[in-house]
Every structure is written in structure tokens, then in C-alpha cells.
Length: 191
Image (cartoon, rainbow, N blue to C red; front, top):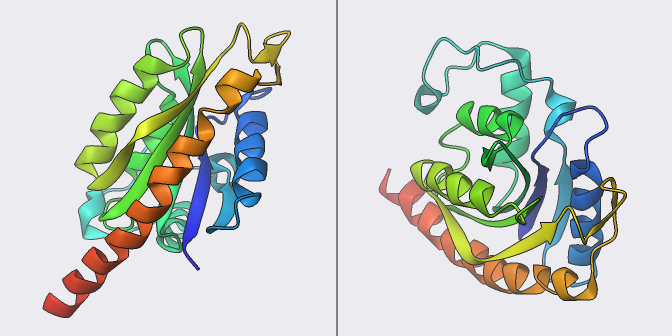
């Protein structure tokens, strides 16, 4: 079965991100169309990018990088759950993505975002990063407001309208994930 990681986008203490990612996982698991797993970047203790070689070489020196690489390579697709920090993607997510290259190539991703403006600027910046990593990102986006989808700005309780924004993301992501497997298989054959 297709494996899709739901990846947290923040490591900040007291973060809202873990609650949003857990909710996405619960909703995705109700579908039965893929094997979904929560991957928390905080579990990998990734320092500010500290590998001597560019990610494309896959010449990882640090144990944290090796563990991160092995985990990400397990999946066919991803849902990135990102808050918006300073009109952009969260630094922890940008850093985690910068560690790897080949592990992400020719795979599909969806994005779930939140912030004062639904995280829209984080989504714009994340799309550029994903494109550079050769991750095909679907058009639909799950978007949530800090003002209406969080109780006291900390407990994730999405409105019905915004909760409905997740299904179209997964509806697009699953077939793209399946289709890109044939692209990866063809690349292996030609190599």
C-alpha cells in the first residue's frame, strides 16, 4: 500500500503544530486509501544544517541525518504541516528539508498550513522549496486560521468549513503518489 508521511513543520516548545499534524493523521486514517504515518521532525534532533557535503551526494556524516534520511526514504508521498513564521515557512521545516535531496525526488506532497492568514505565505515559500527538491506538490491546500480554528490560539479545533479543506488535498495526493512510483521505477531501470 502507498505510504504517506504526515510531517510536522515545527519543533518549537509548546507548538500548535503537533496537534494539527495529529488531527491530519486521524482524518487521513479514516480514508483507508494509503498507509499514513506521523513523522515528527523534533524526534530527529537535526542541528542547523551541519553536513559538510551537499545533500545530493548523500554522503551523510551525522547519525541524526542518517536516521532522517532512512525515515524519509520509506515513504511514497508526504503531507507537510507548516505554520507560518515571519511570512514564511517555519525554520525547522526548511532546515529539515535542506538535509536531503534524493530521498524526496519524484514523490508527491500536499500541504496543510495555519497562521494568522491561514499560512498562505508559508505555502507559497514551501512550494518553491518542494519544487527544487523535485517533489510534485498538489494544488489543493488545507488551510487554517489561528483566529477561528484554535481555541485560545493553542488548542486545534477546526471549523467545519476549514476542516473540509483537507479532503481535496488527500484526494489529489494519493493518485499523484501512486503515479510517481512509476516515474521512480522507470528511473531505476534506466540507471
